[in-house]
Image (cartoon, rainbow, N blue to C red; front, top):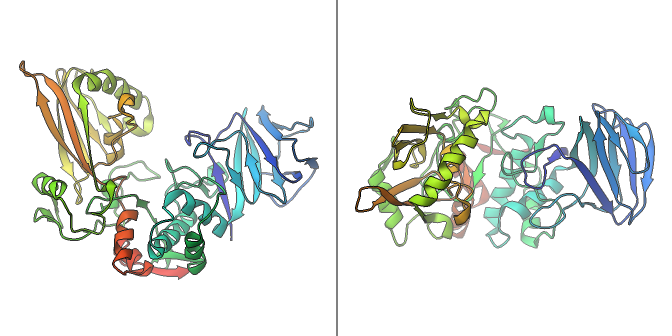
Length: 433
């Protein structure tokens, strides 16, 4: 089965590139094809090894280094893997197996990898889960990743691909690299297998660690089509407990007291309690908060996707920070609504990724908080002003669906990959495509 994978820029933020430089250890053959018919070539060109193929665009027309120009897409093939010299993945230039399609997009180009599904899963496993994990945990990840590749959350039809390679949008695919024997075995033993609900592929979300309890889908994500929050719930993406939890964890939600009790446990009796990602803490001085949060929120308000989840006070200004308070939580304790009290009024933030993102502090190497399952401890000076904020958190990532450290914990206890996927995706079964 073939898959079209959209390659994003080096910062993983866009599918539109200024240009692309491609090389290979073998000849690169280029064929111009209609964008909607990538199997109908028209004109051919050849680029020899050591002679990189650089493609740019202007006026919705592709420019090749041999002087050829075309409003059609170009399909590149080679007997050896491609190296995309103009990109960086994990600090190096990525390699890809398959054919590359380059499309004109105004004065930019789009790069799409045409590869088979199992090769794509190799790249995802290398990027997303440690090779040291138990085989059954890696098999659960393989089935989950394969399902997501066929049914991503965002419809990329307008991007001329099925799925993109960015973890900011889909799942991380960093290209061709050395794959461990265990990862290769996991792919081979689950070949073609996906997770289905009522005979259809599910939205197979996953994250690193849920911190003792996974979260409901509709407590974290907005509707991918309408942007509405919360979206309609998905019956197979319901939060599940990862073991023995404090009494305050119930089917209706969790108390802050229970979250603190779990955070303070020395040896949590959960599938993921063994992991370093289980809990974390960061101390932020009031000076750092004051110097960054105003600008960060201003930037977020300029972005349509994030601005919809930010409600400013009547003053419309961000005054001196007084306190942070989680107003609503999900079943795992994920912050759904946060209020920030300032000297000019209270700001309201909704949705866990938006809430995590307001804490962008470069000096602390924080792009965002590690998760939305957070607790706040305020420290005030003698004059009553905020001096520092301690943020304590459980888990790493959104915490919806399969969590990798929990899957590893289950595998260590002898659970099979089918039992693991059934635990995280309720009411589902394994099917073959």
